[in-house]
Image (cartoon, rainbow, N blue to C red; front, side, top):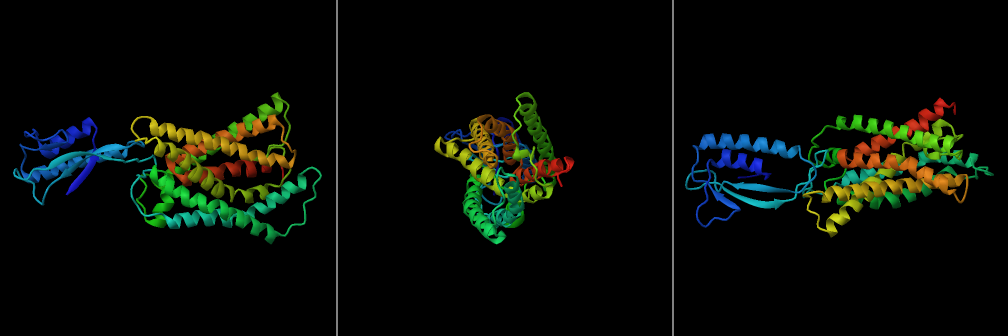
Length: 371
């Protein structure tokens, strides 16, 4: 029988005190192996060991993402006696539990989760069509071209598949190496380990950060409009955009699945994993945190940059000050989504994205009377 627990000094003391008693090293043993010489009777030993094990594991479960050295207790047989004492050896075991309770471990690939994410981002693609038509109707000099809905849906289906198949499959594989991913979906669909926190624990953070970043976005747009006199439309927050609310709300059912699968699951996980792999970041110290924050910031800037393409409906090339405004509006949202993804999992990022889209593309145009 073997039990693995965290090996910081406090937990090591508990383990040796409760499980081995007052331990002393025999001549010839190394610093990585201790032999117990004074043991309590067997029933008491077992009970004390179980108590210590539970205490130590509770401490490990509250830890942050890191690689941890572990103690392995080898009972060497079914009975623990003075002639067969437990041997304790210190070994390196990479454990990277993140805030949503996942642990980087050898487990089967979550194919069902990958297929679900691909299907969700692909099948909701046609819902963007009414929003695209609305854009074409208000674009300068543009009467919407005579496009077949089925032709557009087929083109969108192909583009989504080309984007999401590699994003979902690679993202889940890379994320599992550093303790990231979609913990609840993997638990529901693929039988992965149960997340430490229930699904309900993601609801408040997702709603809170959606509200906060929406207020920040509106404030930045207001500064550019009233202080810098930039009255250019801001499609990313439905500002000065004469498109009916229902068109943009339909599109809000697609963007969270597709964008979060690509930006957070794939891009953020890959950017974080590469320096960890190349520079052999062990997880002890700040190395892993630095890699994750570099990935969060990089994907947030990328998230802001590609939203500039929406402004090209109104001007091409897009003025530099409008490009700057778009990045400043969208990048804080990307930072929040990245942080939520690392702390709570992909499901939380998708939910927060959906909530903020409902706020800026549903509640705002309704409040402005754009029916």
